Amino acid sequence: MKKILFSFFILLSLLKAEVINVTATPQFLESNPDIKVIDIRTPSEWRETGIIKNSYTLTFFDERGYYNIENFLNGLNKIVKRDEKFALICRTGSRTTMVSNFLGKKLHYNVVNLKGGIMSLVSRGYKLVPYKQ
Image (tube, rainbow, N blue to C red; front, side, top):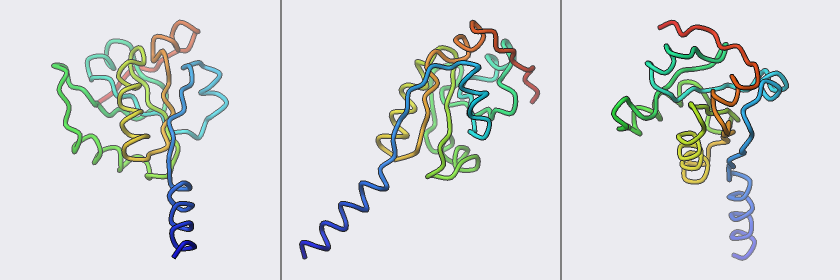
């Protein structure tokens, strides 16, 4: 019985995902070209500033600050596999901090939280591309 419990806890520890906090910089994007970046801002924000080239747009909080976790998770699961590492970005990093912690700590996704958000990237010279619906 002890061996079964020990094996169970080892397996659980291997399945535990994590949240990695990284400052949003052009260098991070350049050195991780295969990581999927998901922009959780609103459509009006995407239109206003543009988006990261080849990123995915998936709103978490709507224009009024409301969210629908079921819709978000359905969209997320169409973009990434549960064990796949991916990055989240918003305007300044506030929203992604909350969402990353929820996804990583509660639902065990492998999330990279891009701290500082789009504003950090732009302030470091990153050129966004226009958002096209």
